[in-house]
Image 1 (spheres, rainbow, N blue to C red):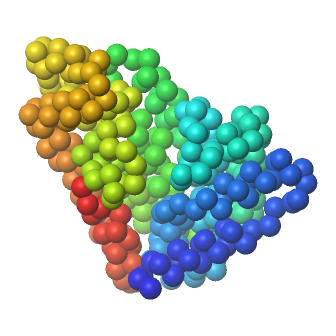
Image 2: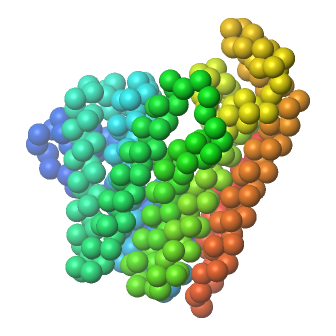
Length: 320
């Protein structure tokens, strides 16, 4: 096993062995079902590895790691309802398998269980973890609302888009990393660097996802390529094009928006290539990736950072 795979196995075991009440079944069965769907478990893994940077043990960090994953899954259950998504990880979403009311309530309960996990720590640690997760939860809601607002907006600026993904996606990764430092009572400076490391990494990760959705390999990405283009989603690629394109290029984009799916994807990708949009977005991803590395390097610890770096290589260097 690699440096992180054994931690990942321990996280998965902790999550899947958790016992929920049997009744009412329509409240707890969906939670059990959704948590068993799996996932990358990236956020809890960063909590574990961040704690280890300061001598933390796996056993001590598992409840906090599980809390992050439970909270994340709560947001996914609710996101699926708002998006009308029929599947999650190739299986029916909770609102499809049961109904939207059950999904809302089960998601709410899962969020409460996340805070209960934090209750396993002594009072001062619980308070610090809870305050950060509460702040993060509000920010995630803000980011989700911004994302929905974008659907009704004709123009979204780069700054607006980056702030949306920071709130919707990146602050939770920042929280996960900071959790490790809070657990081990490291300095506030170290905790801030951990948070900023995760935050910038999350932005780089989301930009990479935007790029992979359009230019990745379907077999490697695991989903249809061009989905964001077909739905006119305002990704960084889209917003960059709108800011840089000439009137003629915008007219062609408008024409392609009414073309067949295959022609639309192919044509708009070519516009992105011709206008150096892809090149720009890759540079923006690299900028946030480098910022995350700068914060990682600023963390003061006598423990090797190899475990974190190995995980980073796995995440960020996926093939296009």
